[in-house]
Image 1 (spheres, rainbow, N blue to C red):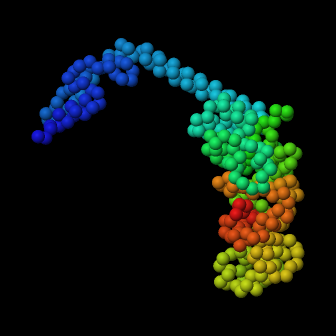
Image 2: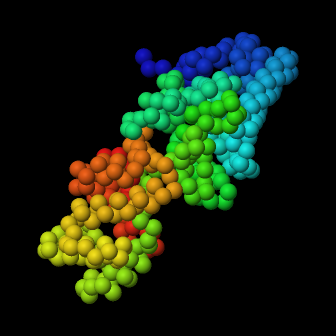
Image 3: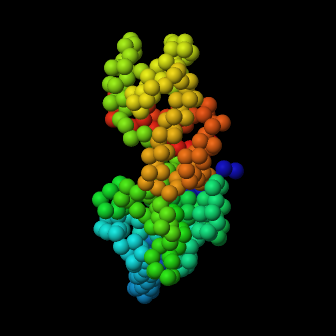
Length: 355
């Protein structure tokens, strides 16, 4: 036999621990005594549940909850201050909003990974990365050099921190905080082993050696603006396409191989002022790469590039660069290849990816 709406709602009330007989029950959260009664409205076919709360025991419970909340907030503020003091001590150039932002990000990254702040500060001081093995490697994955696996997710988060600058120069780039924070503090100097530098002489300094770092397609450029090269190109040759740039897929259908080689050689002259014979796409790519990295090594002792997944490749000189790219030139296309602009001031550049 079908149950009435009143019976249905009485069952729901019982499921919710409501005693519909009118008995006294103990409220589960605040400890107050509650009296529950019910009335059935025949017109609307609804069950009306009336409750009357007796707050004889509530005050003590509220005080206890407030004390717990206050204790929690005090603890959180203490740990936040502890972390902020660590960062201020070892990275004193961080001020104001930059200091607050990096502290907040690191704090939440630790919280999400169940790492206490006291533990974090201690481990950051000692280094969560195996600094010696990492700096001895020419290739690998940065996350393989984390000493304790529990810090992998933490490291993946803080690698995105880009706040701060040094001396009014460029902003800190992606991955730089991960390396500097992760490599720890030198107890002999009481300073980070790896120092973030922004004076135009690389990005990171370790043992007086400067390294340029690019993460996830950062660019190595020739130092000359695309729109200026385009103007010079058009003074050297008169073709219908006044916005011609190399390596475009559509050119394969529009021009012969010999025409493209001719345009490539003239484009290289516009970049370098050097006369050349006909240049294939791969030959022009190699020349742009060499020119870009000569510029890099004028200011840095080494260069390292990372993919988003942490995979890296390190170079110490032009020979290292040319050996690496010589059998990969055909892979340098689209966003994995070069930035060549005709209308913009962006320099002609290689997107740096580990292939």
